[in-house]
Image (cartoon, rainbow, N blue to C red; front, side, top):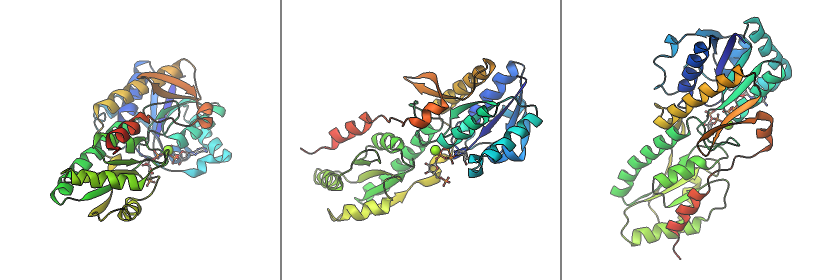
Length: 321
Ligand SMILES: Nc1ncnc2c1ncn2[C@@H]1O[C@H](COP(=O)(O)OP(=O)(O)O)[C@@H](O)[C@H]1O
Ligand SMILES: O=P(O)(O)OC[C@H]1O[C@](O)(COP(=O)(O)O)[C@@H](O)[C@@H]1O
Ligand SMILES: [Mg+2]
């Protein structure tokens, strides 16, 4: 193996640049050449490759987004398109690829491995929805950004004795909502994986106001319903002065936190060492704070297990009986 490629795919996530930096610096340290593949699998098929030197990644660890750009390119699910991608890599002498992305991107990484290009997947998504890992690159920054936004919302909510229903991202996964909800002292947290009870949340909010609390916060995962839909349901159980707020893509931006920079760096370094040991078709994850690997194929049959104790803690604190 002489030359490796690296790409970022799917929704961008803070810390992707830190991972690209770690891959580049580790690979160059081991005498490899590194090519950045721009725009995810779309750029792979188009041959949009740029050589990366250590100087190219010297000022990237602190940057949000992905300087290699990202893309959603559903065509890569087709075998003939995957073959074109593998041909581009061979044409450029690239023997192996590191793919930073979410569950969708891992399908692409596995396809390349099957076509003879060893590929390793790094979990890059704010959703934290990947099986066999408790952590994905970007999850911590997105949680922190959403928490900071809700702190600001709380100021105005308190001034007007209002309830705010806040939508956070996460597609079908409630991890972001649970973490942000607990960190923001939410009166209610609504996630797709567990049943929710609007009446109970309304009672908690009423009890809070009766006890002298001057605001209410309910965090609703986007995969359940919109904040506005939840607001309408809530109003059936009380005469609240309630507003709906959707945090949306602001959660994906910003400079990565310490946790995201450190983990992205460890994972990028680990991925290069896996390739140097001739491995491919593996996904890197983290369990109990330790890096691990699983066959990508196994991930497709598994479901991410969130830390539902976060919800249990909040439920216990907001329970009225
Ligand atoms: N079944 C698949 N086979 C090959 N490539 C895929 C497949 N599904 C997704 N991809 C590639 O991965 C990209 C990112 O997937 P997506 O689900 O949008 O985001 P994420 O990887 O962050 O979950 C897609 O746009 C496509 O290029
Ligand atoms: O950027 P888009 O295309 O609007 O997609 C929004 C979706 O992307 C995410 O921000 C990240 O998802 P992925 O990491 O799977 O791409 C989700 O939380 C959200 O539902
Ligand atoms: Mg995804």
